[in-house]
Image (tube, rainbow, N blue to C red; front, side, top):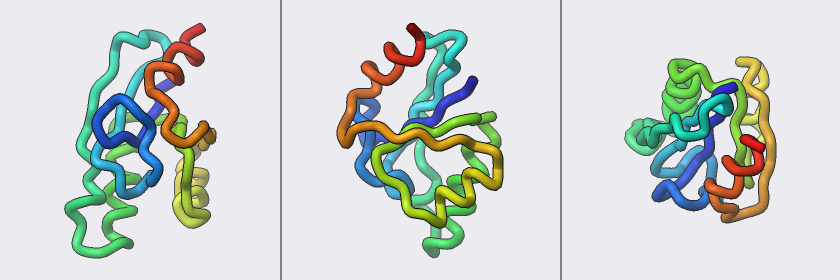
Length: 104
């Protein structure tokens, strides 16, 4: 399974899903296989186009699930319509703790 996690610097989960600077994308079958991708939403002209760019990036990276601490209802509906599961975590959780929890 491919998981996407919003982050500002790659260490902690961002408090804001859509406006995070980056997303950590990793494969649960190989926790060492991960990448940090810039969130395209931050360069969009409008909020609507930003959501579209973010969703497209997640789909292009074959993300099956996102883990976040905060998500607006519209984005959650958009993710679910694309068959991307949403799981919540504690605010400012470490990405390392999430990866370790999933891979064990």
